[in-house]
Length: 266
Image (cartoon, rainbow, N blue to C red; front, side):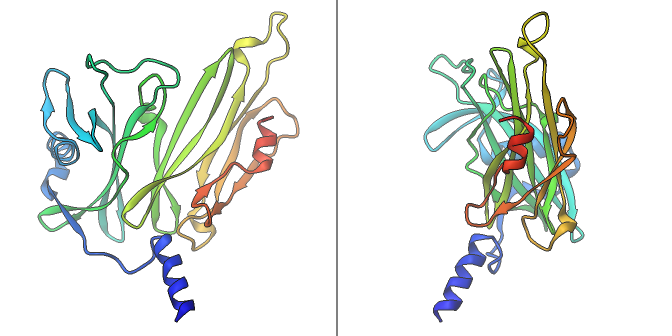
């Protein structure tokens, strides 16, 4: 009995326990065929009414007032059903309604997975709708987001993020995936390092180390399989072409492996 309980808890942690009853939203399934109608219904569902003056959907999440806008919609066919991966972005307005504008100030990111079920869309999973992401008060642009198959039949987001300081640029990829009905931050993988702003013209040698992150869903039957870092460019002659990135089931995160840290000279 104890062994069964432990196994059930492990399955529950990884989102493999028996499915819960679906939570239906007020979003009509028919809205999926009209981008304007879809986004209007989605934003009102999660954040509240549209504020014409602020040009965003406004509402409070855990007591924090937010100004949010549509960011990216990715629709994936899974087992013959259309599943919508929705990213929403914005900021928490200051007392005067302005957006924070500092290097360490993140924007706000809302993520949700919706499935077409009858007349209304069902909510599969979501994050807290107000996750900190990016800098200068903004979430990274939509082209920095990708929906990929993290593991067999299990999709999630990869979000690229770069930051520059004193001539050095560092970057990486944040991973977001669903465990049960919650979308979790599954870690940040370093992928880029260069000193383009502080090299050459007598200031020392330039370097650049850059990798891209790819998924490998066929590599195993795991819901969260290994990711692959593939070299884009490097001033290191012996830099590895690919580096595999395992998923830690204990931490529920992807972590930058030592080989990739070394390839980036971190």
